[in-house]
Image 1 (cartoon, helix red, strand yellow):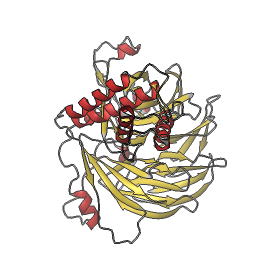
Image 2: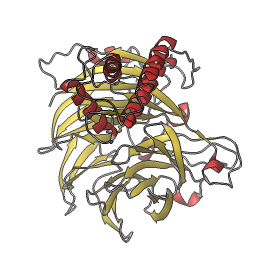
Image 3: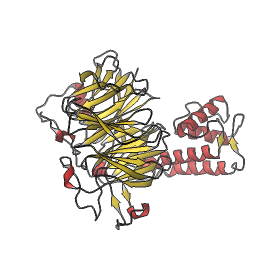
Image 4: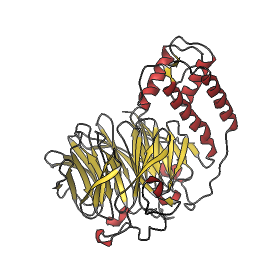
Length: 493
């Protein structure tokens, strides 16, 4: 297949023809791949039994809320049993429910506090209790999403010791363009205009909430937009360093003032409609702010110092720089046709932007907004990942079917490797030793050893994998397949 720049389309690609031969693994994966239309009826139910238990637990704890610490090591009784049960439901407790606040319970509370970004003391105070109740409440309500399905995957593999093992397939009202781990136990999945939603999952594969992309723009200070209801089309998400905020790009907006939406083969000179970034509070899972940016915003990145939110605007051909404190766009920097992936150095001084309509990467100084370039890195650079030391930059070359490793300081291309047809998104392991790549037309996930750029393994997943993320604690890789599913793989390092 000949691929031009239009292979970055935000529409579902065609399925394999009837005459194509599939491997055993592909057949096993393919038999439940979504074949229907994008739109399905939403059905809702309510887990009243779970809610009743939760309500009783809340009442029990409210009776003990007059002290600074509701429970701590040495506490005993029903309240401790309820705490252990909630910790178990949230994924932090695997032991028996004993009613004794022992060292194991203390450590479980500390783990929960650490992931939530609050004071870590191992004691159940008011704030810890409130967040934990909110978390388990959302989980008990998750059964209202009757379309949500989780399937175990146990395909036969002829190799004796594969490193990547297919574990789960998640389905439902999904058209996932991207999936990103929050750092705090949640996974955000963006469903574009096909579902007008962001699905939020926990580590136990529960669908916690579907955040609808509906907003009233005038409620957020945009008085010129008069409608009582606008819809977006969620594309990508990036999280603040503390995991408390999610910034979500919307491909286009739907409402009476939006009459000239952008599209994938647009030209920057065509003056398309602007769009908006949503800021979502990851504890309440509510839209907190909206920020106007350019036309067809795609990738989002937050600087390590939490000062800037950067957005690549596909159709206006520029980069939006947002002040994370004022929630305002403070600068727009022209870059050229189809800016896409973004990576920011550990010092939050330089940003690297893949300009997909070229063979180049823009280097933007975040202090004086000057732009330099890494030229001729490869055809149609799409996604960028920078290692945690800021030494090497990795780029998927959608037109060359390769992934390149670049010395960030010199701009020298160290190595290129073929992973599959149309490599799209990537994620690095926490120790920088492995790179995971989704290959859109090969329907595979690749594991690459970064030191040597050696391909270790290719695993077939569902059709058109386009997004990928990694949970560094569980070593699970989540893959967004644009044809309507999430695939979860378990890696062993």
